Each structure stands twice: as structure tokens, then as C-alpha cells.
Length: 206
Length: 180
Image 1: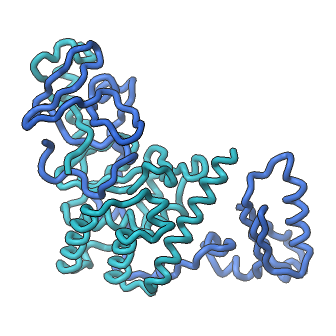
Image 2 (image 1 turned 180 degrees about the horizontal axis):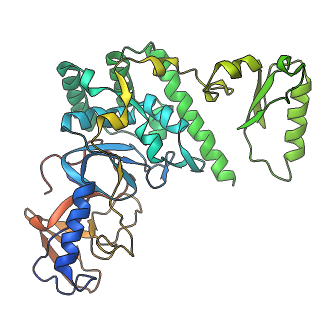
Image 3 (image 1 turned 90 degrees about the vertical axis):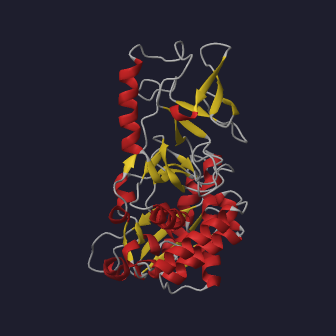
């Protein structure tokens, strides 16, 4: 995978007319410092508004083997290891985490939501220190498989219990020993999908 | 969401609380109808109602005292006990190094403004792009100079991978083998 956005953080040939500031060298030093403080192997939308029912919303969190600089549409959540970022990206996109995120959202309008720092910090997540090497390896294998799949948009994933989403939820249900069956997970997904659809309809009636 | 409690009176403990999810935005045209439905339900012997305006449920007031989380008591909500009890649980701030907003990308920013910071590939659908990438080569990227008609060639070593928006990001894993 290749990113679709890049920050320019050095001067280059023929850039004389490009920059908007006069002291380019000093500006770039500050830019690199700012980017360095934000770069991360795990990012999550919701610092700025996101629309959970948009046809362009597929995932809310992403991991990156090479650190990536998110704009302030995102929360930057750097993990100690890339393996940890994988597990967290899977978890933050799981239906279980989405339920909690929806519950603790700052509603902007209907399915347009964002999350405050406190809500993000307190979000229940798996304790990586208690996960075995085998469980983390399973997460890596799962991510590889998921990246080859063509996920529909988030709301369709939930309404149709898309197989990729089901795999994420079943993985966590198993390793976290949750008392929930596959049928109940499907019901949970459909319930969340239907709730988002209702919120979307209310928003359209405004 | 609407919550109707009963004033503290001698007999109020015996009166149930009513939890209501409105399905419509209350407006001048429908507020009378919503009100009549709510009052009708409150006075009736029924424990549940579900119509096109609202869904409502009466619950024992003791339940409110026994639960900190009233969200799960709302009509149609799941009791997410399995989420509370899952093993190996902690909070997000314990597993990440920090929780911080992304870089302050805006027009008036001194260091990361919208005029000369981000270059972007076009998306499937309309997503705001300030400097569009025209071509990606092995060691360079060609962009349209926003200040003139000419093209700019930016070498790989002047770039850092970034993400502007979640819109139309269709893969969970973003950047694996370097930037180009």
C-alpha cells in the first residue's frame, strides 16, 4: 500500500516560487518538529467531524508500518510496536469498539460525530501485555487477509454483516473470551447498522 | 432521547420512570401529536409502546438506582455486559504512547498551512485537495504548482507519508513499503 497524501518537509530544485513564507529554511525546521510530534503508526478519525454513514467511510482507524503524519482530522495514537498498532487498528474498527464509540460520541449532527480526548483515553481496549505472541501473530495474519478484501462502506458492513467485519469481531470475541455467540455478534452488527441508518434519516429530515 | 422521571413524592417510588426514544425531530407541526402519545402512554397500563413517532418503555425506578449506566436501559439497547467483562481489558491511554491531535493543517498555520504542505492523489469521489499529484515516478512525484501553470518535480527524500481524511481510505493498513 502507498499513502495518498504526503507532507513536503524539505526544499527541492525549482521551488523558489512555491513557498508561501519568506524564511523557508526556518519554517521547514518548525514543520518537521510539528510533524515529528504527530507522526504515528496508528491513527483514528474523530478529532474533526466524521460521518459514520457516508458512502466514503470504510474504516475509522488505520495502522501504518512506516509512521505516517495525520492531519488534525485525526487522533494520533503512536504505539510502541507496529504489532500493537495492528491489534489496536483492528479493535478500534471492531463492532464492540464502535458500540462504545457511538455511546461516547460528541454528536455534531446525526451520524456526524467526533470524540473528545477524554473519551478516547478511557476507551476499553485489549491489554496488549496480556496477549500471547500467538494471538498477536493471528492479528497480523488477519490484517493481511483483510487488506486483500474489498470492504463496502462502514454502514453496509454492519447492515450486511460483511465477512471481513465478522472476522474482526470473531477474532476478538475468541481471544478476549467474550460471552457472545456468532449469531449474537451478527445481531449486534445489524442493530448498530440500523441505528446508524435511523440517525442518518433523522439528519436528512433537518 | 427523552427521559421522564417522577417528582420525589411519598408514592413516587412506586411510579415507573419512562424512557423514550423519539423517532422524529419535534417540530411545531408534530409536537401536539408527540405529546399526546407520551401522555397517553404514561397514563396507560401498557409497559411498552412503539409507533412511528417514538418508542418508549416504563422501568422500575429501582433499576435507575442500581445502574450507573442508563444508556443500556433505553428501549432497543443491548445490555453489553460481555463488553464490561471481557478479559485482558485496559484503557486506550495505557497502550499508546500518547493521545494527540494530528498536525494543525489550516490556511493560517505558520508551519503546516494549506498552501504548501500537503500533496495528494485524487480520490474516487470529491475530496478537497490543495495540491494534486499528477504522476508518481520511482524516486519523484510530479505535482501541479498551485501558484502557476507549471509542474513541479518533488524528490522522494523531500516527502513524508501523510493522511488527510478517512474518506475513501478503503484499507486498514496504509503504508508498508516506504513511500514510493
